[in-house]
Image (cartoon, rainbow, N blue to C red; front, side):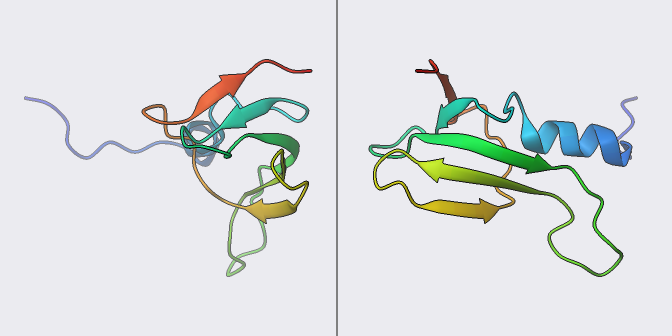
Length: 84
């Protein structure tokens, strides 16, 4: 019988959220004009009660805008792009 009560460590969970992204890498969300460069990844954990517990800072190719967010990697739609 499968164990439906699967627990992962914080580090394992963060690794699934970050996925293959590394600082300096280029990625996209699988939609037009969604390419971005990863500038920094803060794996946390941040202090108790501070959200998000991890974050990633990116610069979008389309307009050069930077943003810090905690959007997890989605292997079904996200992709790795060649670096320039």
